[in-house]
Image (tube, rainbow, N blue to C red):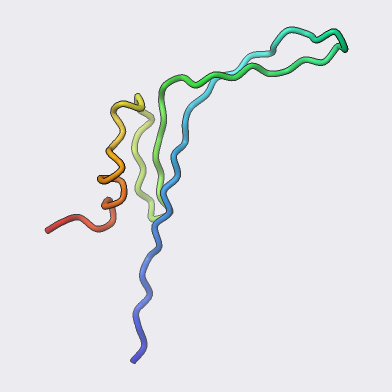
Length: 72
């Protein structure tokens, strides 16, 4: 008997950052300064995606694990 294919789920957390050029070093190099904005988005290979929201508003880890297998 051939088994059916099932979709794999792979969640990725994407934090939003902002950047600006830093001060010149003594050697004349310039680094980019980066900092988190406090917003993030979670996406999955199945197409699931949250909006870009404050990190405190993201679904819990348990909810994210079960986004593809809701309890009935």
